[in-house]
Length: 208
Image (tube, rainbow, N blue to C red):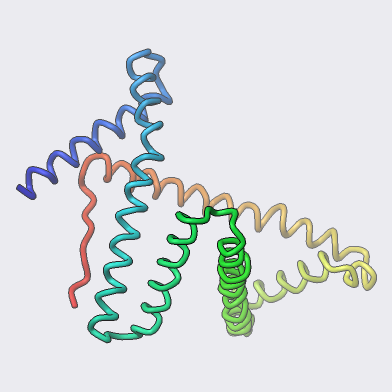
């Protein structure tokens, strides 16, 4: 049974992917209409995926709480906030004072904190990267210092050429490297997409 479901899933993925891709290259009413219909289903499928993921997350957290496994206190806090948020949203609406307090005073603050934490890791990584051990690290250090001096206000006060050098580094070497990375990423994305459409991709789980 599982093999039949897997085959049907791969077939549906293959047909849907081919139709959507052909929509960009051919002008056939049948293909274009079918592709538009498939694209319009994306929000519905994403909604089901969100619900399934939420239920799975909730079930895993509840299972860890029952077993007192790992950091089950964190799981308990997560489940409590999910239940409170859902109940308040369904009973009083998302414009209520309690829901706004949960969203703006708790969720936004926690999100900002999580966004700020990587700054310390970035500073630590920069310190390790800027240690001059070879020619590459020396080029990185010099380029970084020149860009900082060129983009800061005091850099132009020290020497008027710092902004010019900074703009050249950002517009030529840096931009060229970014475009190369984007092209490589695009080729990789196309490769992964083709493998997914053809049903060759495999999702392997990690065994405990």
